[in-house]
Image (cartoon, rainbow, N blue to C red; front, side, top):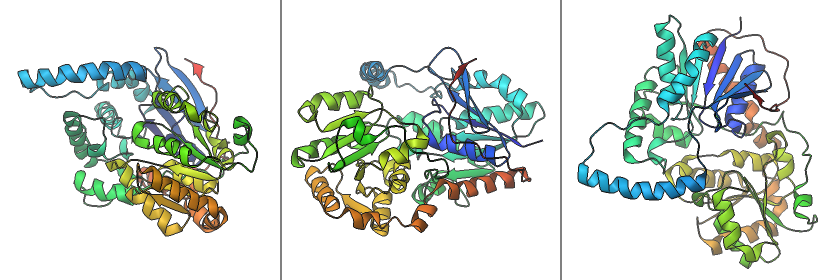
Length: 425
């Protein structure tokens, strides 16, 4: 019988490339894989990627971002007053923990995973309780903690939650069969934070090469411009600290350049930027996400890939997904001077670095790229691209899993890296 693994993540899964790639690769490697994700609906659904099954359960209550922002502002005001006057001492509860454990208990007991893989700090307490629950029923499951972020550097967590999640991290790190990190910079912080005796094992979130397909859409066709028009592209989640506004403001000083943002058009930051900079409507384009397997092909029609992050602790230590995606698309990269990615761009010579939030420096660096695109493209050699591929990272991941299980299951025929349509359960 094939070894089994349950992956837990508190998001909708379908846009989480790391979770999907982990499950897809392990399924191909002979593991039976189930991802448990969260749905904003009251009902559950399920779908597949490769040999892996995905179930989404109502693990948490999801509200619209605009409503959350409005309520949060008012709540923070009254919370500060209450804490000041009442000196609240009670322990801070982990959001959604009991709800998630209850939703997953029946399935987990039936599935009997050999490994539970906790994706990020939000999934770790859930995974830990499920492992305890299985142990009480006579089944031993090992824990893998996949640290996507450095908890003390997560901006939206208050001090109480940072403390609570960090305590859980340190406790569970002691019994984890493996701790995964996305970069050496992250590992540098995790070792003292989690009080580790050895460094975490690196599984970087690089793009999948084997699963890439020609895009059914055309980026230039979608915005109605020809090959001669210079395009900067930003792909991924949008929030103020992601620095997209720096790129929009730069359009004033780059009158022939178009900016394409591939993101959720209903994202509140995107909506706000479109309204605020309506004078650039003819050159500032927001396009919806494309299937992950087609993204590299779609991006390749642009000229420059943007990573204009602000200085935040987790930004300094990350080598984020889009870095590898831009490389595989053979795009020169324009990155702000956040530590890890700026160092990598300088090492490889595949782009330029600008001072975060500095529009004039952004423009100067972008113009330098546009003036000699081909020389930056040549820096992404076949050897460099192979090293920055998910295939290389998957070798590490599968080796870790097989070591923990003490068995190397029979590999399966590789299925396409495609997410099927969700079916309501």
